Amino acid sequence: MSDDWGDASGIEGNYEDDDDEEKSNEMNETTETSSPNGTSETSETKTNIKEEWNGRTIYIPDGILDELEDTYLESQLKLRKAGQDEFKKNRHFYPLVVQFGLEALSDADDDEIQARLTEISDE
Image (tube, rainbow, N blue to C red; front, side):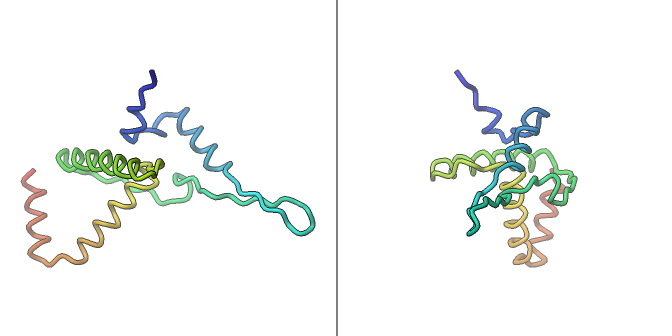
C-alpha cells in the first residue's frame, strides 16, 4: 500500500532524489509545435522556481507555523476535491499566502495592524 503522506504534507521536493526528479520534470517539460518548413520547435512551459524566483528566509512563531501547515493541507484537499491535482507548497501555496496577506494588510487600518502585532507578540 502506498503512503502518500509526503505528498499531502507538502514535503515533496525536499529530498535530494525528489528534488532532482522534480527539477528534471520541470526543466524538460516542453511543448512541440510544427513550423511551416516541417521542423519541430520546442519551448519550456515551466521554470525551476529555485533558480528563477527570489528566495527569502523568514522566521515564524510556532502557532502561526502550525496554522500555515493546516491551511496548506486544507487548501490542498479543497483543490483536489475540485479536480485540481497539483498544488505544491513552494510553487503555489506560499505565493498565495503572500498575495492574500498583502491584500489584507493594504486594506487594514492602523488599529487592525496594531491588534495583530499585539497578538503576535503575545504568542
